[in-house]
Length: 99
Image (tube, rainbow, N blue to C red; front, top):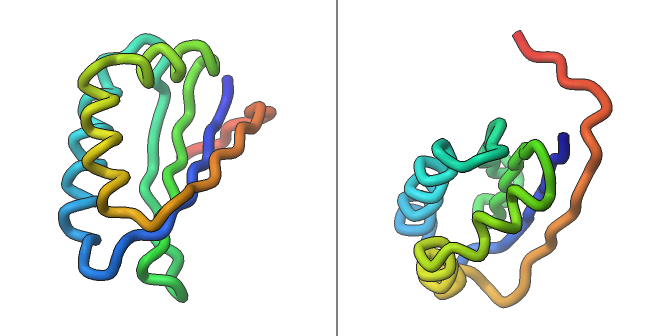
């Protein structure tokens, strides 16, 4: 299992539109092969930053989803609401403890 963490900064005033688009993206991931879980985080000290935490069975499952035309279209809409650049880091899940 793999977790991908993506961090980005939003354009001022774009939070509501951006979060609506991300919620659509999360809903679309639910039916994907390999999807495990996702979280959207906002650092309490940085209201324009967003962190997406996605857990997938494999990086290949995530990559397949990222090649879908609907995903690419939503990415373009999201990119317009963000400042340039974002950071994506991959982690192997060693243990997963949930309530």
